[in-house]
Image 1 (cartoon, helix red, strand yellow):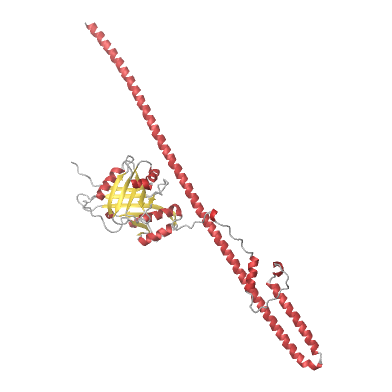
Image 2: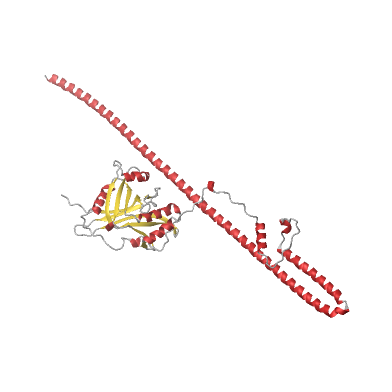
Length: 453
């Protein structure tokens, strides 16, 4: 009996689809790429080395890689890794779920098989992982894990971080006929309770070479939570257009300015009584410079009248000394009053100007906020349109692939039938020819026998 050789596997970049039930909300999650670009696929790396006859230490590598676009590295794809230590694997079952097998009720309910068939077609297989410890997520060191776009890179990062909190999940692979025996031996080797293999402890294999020039790090629970928030921030979508009421009409700007100017006037200013007539906005609205000129002109006229009265009083000889002192006092008093009133008017003008400028700045800021909100809404709409277009293209590709497979199968069947018919007709003709020759040979032999007799 031939001795069984130790199992040795080194499989890299196997496109896969990972399905699991979220530990937080219980929803079914799927991590995969809908397109078929080989540089963007969610991939599984498998490495396994059983101990030989002279060794008791084996080794293994199980890791998922998800390439994404990060803002810190806009010109290259940055792979994020999820490592599964061989020592943390409680069991690996599979490969299973061949096309002729009956799917589980859980798979039927979650709809995962429809997603897998759309990705890999009818030929696929599954590996079920059950872990004793959580997998470890490895990212580049010193690089913020912030995606360039929410879809699909932000969603991929968010799903990978959620998968890092799961202890059981299924990995679906395309079945090409050659992987199934190897993966079955791998599942038996990892799940055998009687195994005596001692796995290598310490750092993750090859971790230092994952990101040349940057280094790598393992994210803890806090790091995963922070990455979830950065990868998929909550979107505040605008309300539906039908539910939004019309805004109230804005107040006239000049009316608001006049109200604020009247409210901020000096408390010592005496209000003028109106004459009962109704004044329009145009008749009462004047510039602050005009108000200052009118007040100064009135006081100048009053000063001239006082000077004229004092001059007449000074012409009387009896009151000449008193009139001189009174004239000087009144003149100085009137001039000081004029200066005080002018200062008050200018202060009011400056206050009103400050309030008007503040209101203008406030209106400008409000307009800028509205423009920013409109730009964000347009970005959200662009992302939605891109997603719908991508989904439509992928559905068309899947439909074309299915039609191509159906056409190929029909053509193969037709060619097979034609070949079978041709083969039967050729065999019939050959048989008839042989029989004819045999009959002729028999007659010739009989004639020869007769001649010999």
